[in-house]
Length: 463
Image 1: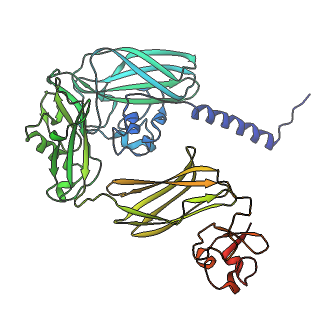
Image 2: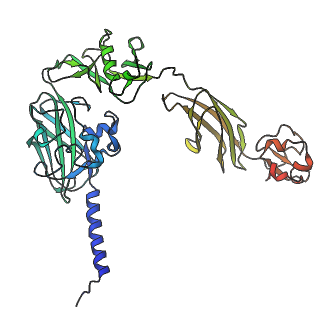
Image 3: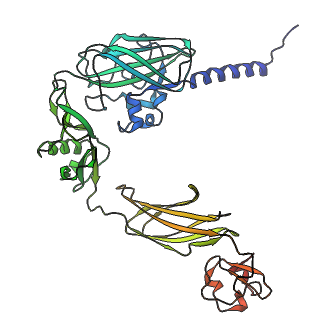
């Protein structure tokens, strides 16, 4: 028997092989819970680029250090997609406390895969934290290795490792080598070890992070909290003197300088490798004494002249019948440019939605084709996108079962008081719902009398 391979057959076979290989590589994803990329996803690290959405995807060539990513690109696994991870300075990234000796590293796999091994490397005692990570930064003998045995790990996996003695800021590199591809996943951990610093006297409770550009007269508020809530009498406020002082990496240092001069229970800065607390351009940590009752601190920025958003809502109708679409029209007027979101809820589910930018006045219209009988909640939230200040109003609407007929007024009875969806009868008992109140209430019966006027269909819907 002979098997004849045509060009099309070969192309199909190659396509299947390539697809299988690509799928095999694409299906494996994972990260260490305390990694730089995961802290980007949590919002602890800022200005990370796209990795904040995909901390599990830091993937590159395998078998570091013999091969693997090029020097200077190790933190991003050599990928052009995650280059912000390669930025390196003494203060660029949030650090997790760590001690030499027994430590547990927790991996999370969003797509687990058969594995060759996991290996852990640590920076040399004298590495330069101001240079992008290269092979000269690391002790190239892994201090911890776990074999994968070509098996598929669980979606959550922990490794207990003995971490070598270090002091100050160090980096741990975890590498997960996938068994059936030529790829590995790289997780960089920024770790702060004891060493020269007053280990047992200060406790980190928050950050002053360079998250935005500020302007003159903006106010930065350092807000301390204990277990019962905010300590309003210990809030420290710093007013930005000039626009230049509001530059993204400048105002955190100036705020830390100001906080340290106020005699507050809080202090701010960066603990360097000699154990000194110094303020720095960029991110600064907030500290209290270990025996302080303060458990955390938050930073709030109040723009100059900031006022709370105020908006007014004018509802034309709050009661509806279930025999026709619920057409809800209302007007929103504001005291500033606001992003206004309106959602109509029934039984905990959103059944209608609209969002508009309102400069001073806008009309909203929400429609539910087949409204359910019962109470509906209209929730309207107005937010200033520049300051993130927001406010909310809630309205209750009622949908009732439509009348079966006979109780509706006979037109023109009640004319002048017809509203949207008001139901009336004509002389023959036929029912009509008002859709344009202005025309429904018109005294010109020749034009707008339901069912008989020349233009009645502009004003009414026959039911």
